[in-house]
Amino acid sequence: MITEYDENAISAQQLLKQLGMEAPLTIGEIIRTFRQSEEITQKVLANTVGISVQRLNDYEHNRRFPSITTAYQLATAIGFSPNILLKMVVEEQLKRTGCQNLNFQVTVTPNWV
Image (cartoon, rainbow, N blue to C red; front, side):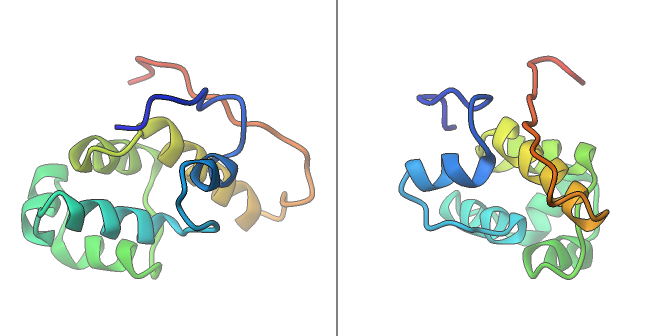
């Protein structure tokens, strides 16, 4: 899990770039990349999180967008920072509602669940 940066100080895409991951990455690309790096099949991950394999496939190919709860569960299951993935989910939700021109910072605090 990524812990060497202050995950609340910058945007998710800026953090990914600092970590050497080519930004901008989509949520689906992160889920797929980390799932594969952990050698977890879609079936196993979907069962772990409690979603269908088709829904997971849709997330990975950016056809659907996970809820905040599902994003947290996915991040935890694949060993990716929940803070970063949750920030990405919230930022994407704001963009999809026409708020992309707002200057905002998403802060995720531990133990929110």
